[in-house]
Amino acid sequence: TSLEDFVRYLKAEYLDASYLQQDAFHEVDGATSANRQRYVFSRLVRILRARLSFNDKDAARRFFQELTQLTKEWNRSPQGSPDFTRLEHQIAVLVEGLAPSQVEGSTAHV
Image (cartoon, rainbow, N blue to C red):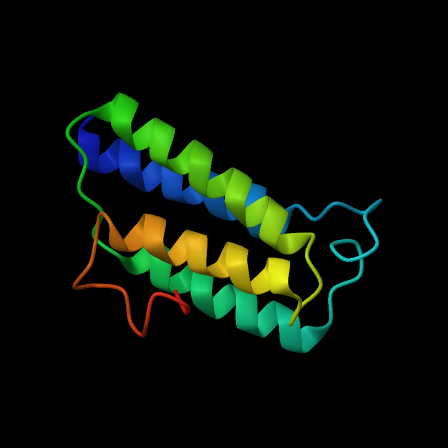
C-alpha cells in the first residue's frame, strides 16, 4: 500500500472513530445538537481535505492516533467551555504543523 493510500485509509478511520461513532453513555457526546454537529463536522472536513505530509506510515499512524484521541476528548467537552476551546486549538495546531497552508482560518478554528 502506498503512503498516500494509507493516509486516505487513516483519514477514513479517523472520521469513523471521531465523528460517526458517538459515546452513547457520555452526557455531552451521547446527545449532540444539530448546531454542534454542523460545527464539528465542518472542522473535520477541513482536516480530511488537507494534504498532510508524512515521512512514513508509522509517522502517519502516530499522528492520527493523537488526532483521534484529541478529537474524542473534544467531543466530550461542552461546546463553548474552556476545554472545548483548548482542545479545538490543540487539534488546529497539530494539523497545521503538517499542512499550514491548507487549513483555513486561525489556529483556533480547524
